[in-house]
Length: 186
Image (tube, rainbow, N blue to C red; front, side, top):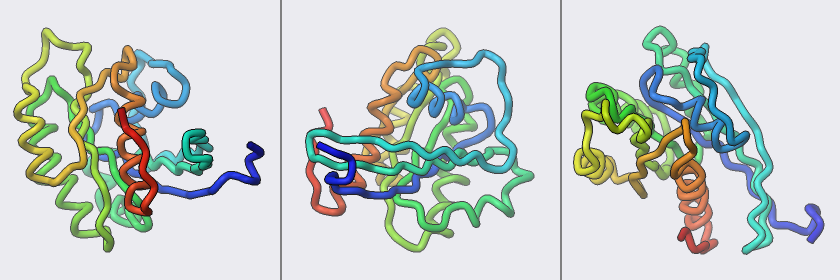
């Protein structure tokens, strides 16, 4: 089917979480199937736009991904980035307990205070490949996901790609579901 004949949607999604939890790496793995060992912090915000065709439902989605810096010094600017978002991936690092604590105390609270409509969240525990350094178990992640009413909780590895695509698609499919478009997630 030609792109002009497809149903078209535009969704803005946010990636939120503390600095160095792997937000940019998740995006790179999802879009380019690549991982960079050198950590380069995001300054302010990085906006990436992709066209995603979902053949099962003849739909083209323009996905606008806002990779928002986790450093505290950007806090006063961050809130203006939330406007118009359809959903968020809330990301923490499985090897650093405070990053999960901040999902509830900081990131979720911030979005709830500054996004005027109800949006969907997927909670992501990243760095699954660092099993030997892991300090947060799956039950803790599930508990936080339930508390914040996330549509799903997924553990990922931005390094090896494990569950990365599933995390993005779960959010996208749940957003589509709000508009009455049903897609089998599994």
